[in-house]
Length: 210
Image 1 (tube, rainbow, N blue to C red):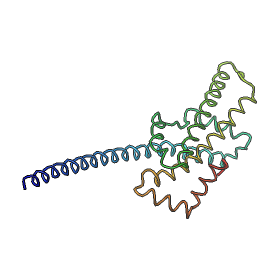
Image 2: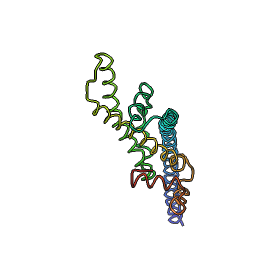
Image 3: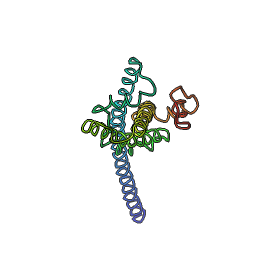
Image 4: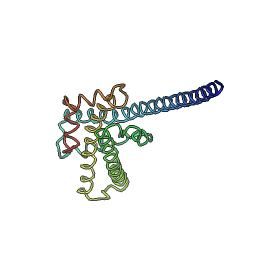
């Protein structure tokens, strides 16, 4: 009888330790998950704010160019002139925020990475064009040939509009994949019943054209 009591006591202690450890682990995992979700949601909102500045700026400038009857040839230099001192920039926290959400979906990751690449390219070209303007104002002549200036202006115009279309797709995906409580449901719908934005996102990634 004593042996049975001792055995039950040992099993009771062991069961209590296992249940207590399992409960502690569950709480730790839950806290970790909630912390990760808060960071992902905050990152999603920060990215959305960054990208909205590009889409809004591009929409306004393209409307202004249309109203001013700016030709395709003049548009790149016209755009650079209008962006002087007003060009949207990506936050210093953009890279960190992207790293928190990039694994959510391949499409979202591609859009966000291409935005970063295009932005780096146009920033470099924009600096060169800005230096050209400053040199011209100071010396009354161009530092570089018109062809090289126009080549950089074309790069800025293409990159700026590419950022806008990728930003539109990313801003469509973030509320559905990052800040949503039911991302799996959206993935199911987008796979079996893709809408126009889903198709646009896929086409843009595959062909580079919206």
